[in-house]
Image (cartoon, rainbow, N blue to C red; front, side, top):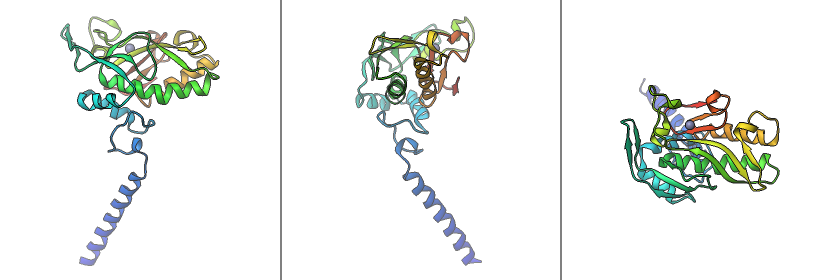
Length: 231
Ligand SMILES: [Zn+2]
C-alpha cells in the first residue's frame, strides 16, 4: 500500500515538473506569470496584463519610462460624480504621432504603444505597399460621459480615460485611411483596417468597429475596460 502511495506521489510530482518545464519553454508573452514588457510581441496574456495596469499605476509608469512613449503627467480630475482621471497621462506621442494630445489612463497609453508597434505597423507593412503610418487620427480619449452620451445608464470607459476613439490613419505618402470611408472595402486600405481591428482584439479588452453598430460607423473604439468584446 505504502509503495503504491509513493509511486502515485512520484507520478504527480513528475507531471507537475513536466508542466512547469513546458511553461518555461514558452516565450514570456505566453507565460501566465511572466512580467509584462511593452517591447514583447503580443501573446496569450497581453490584453489581460495591460488591463491589469489600471490598478497598478506605479508599474505602468515604470513600463512607460522604459518605452518610446512621450507623455506628460496630468492633473487628476473628478467631475459630475461619475468621471475620474487618476494618475493619468497626456499623450505627446506614442510609437506614432497623434492628431491630438489626448488625456488618458496610463494603462491605455501602454496598450496603444503595444498595438501600434505590433499590430498597426505590421498591418501597414503587409497591406500598404511601402507606405507607413505617419499619424493616427483620433477623436479623443478622456471624456466625461455615459455610453452614447445618454443621460442615464452605464458610464463610458472614456470617463476614466480607459478608452480612445480612432477615426483613421494618415500615411507617409499623404493618403488618409478612414474608418468611415474604407471600412468593409476590399481595397488595400480596407484590408489594412481589418488587420488593425482584428489585431487590436489581442491587445485591448474591447474593440468596437463599424460592425458593432451605427454609432461606430466612423471610428474604432478601443478600451482597457472590464468587458472583453471584439466586433
Ligand atoms: Zn469610444
